[in-house]
Length: 430
Image (cartoon, rainbow, N blue to C red; front, top):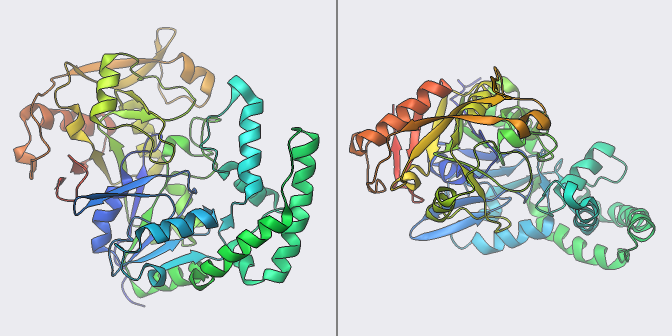
């Protein structure tokens, strides 16, 4: 057996939107394979190079590296229409993309009844809604767990079987739409005609990616695992119920990709230099003032997938420390550090209190998190534009002090610093 080279896992440490796409694109240059292992097109990864910006939702962020194989693992839920649209939109800049992209036959699929059900359910919940992206992700994962109405990508290879299954599922779902929600049902024949065409287009890319990746591990090929969303949105370990429907922590990589846990070497946790959140749920360091608005505008904090304005707040190192320990990270990646330049003040959260009493650990229930007050520590702000820095020494003293304090509180070294969207605006630290 060939000696295994170091594989790398990129995981978000907050509520997603940490600019992981840029980091995956950068590190893909030193890897042979990039694997997306969880989530669906509720994720939005942004990659910028050659003066243009590319927004990705399903295709791994290594697509622009022509010697890299991109794998959509079995832990992902795939909307076939979205996948094909994304391929068509980017293949001019991603050479031989359709030959380099493998879609797991085990990946589950999103259909019109999933998006319709999610929209109706959110509407029905009213003020108690979760605040989903309305992409059908949750219902698709629910079907995966329930098994009866689940459809995997590999079933497109058996169209006669699948056509009958779609007919049966639509009939069952229409009962819910009509009798529970008072809404019109779906036309099974029309749904099948549309999705059968998608299946034919995807067919050449369908593969047993588990077998492919296990061979790659044995051969010592370098694999980069790309997580979607972030640890605080993890279905088991995040701020439940305001979470996503998959394991968005590092723990989702081995089942989502189909490799043993020990095949993963370096784990890098990505955080912004401040904290953001989209949708509902508690957010102790949220800034509802002019500084929060300034961070949002300087950081262009609007959802890649939904366009919704993101909620912005001070860097929550108390929550990040929890996520860092949970994931067992080897190092931190700080992104959008340039956004903090010019703020009138600068703070980080180092702990929480509830009713005046400090918490020893990050709370495991939303009621406690709702009551939590951040313990804020002031740091020296900087006025300089740091986006042109190309080494750590080029950064202002106050900026380096900010990075050092983040390392101290979280308990892990900062290995990469991003100070802008382009590949060149990156500082690597040994």
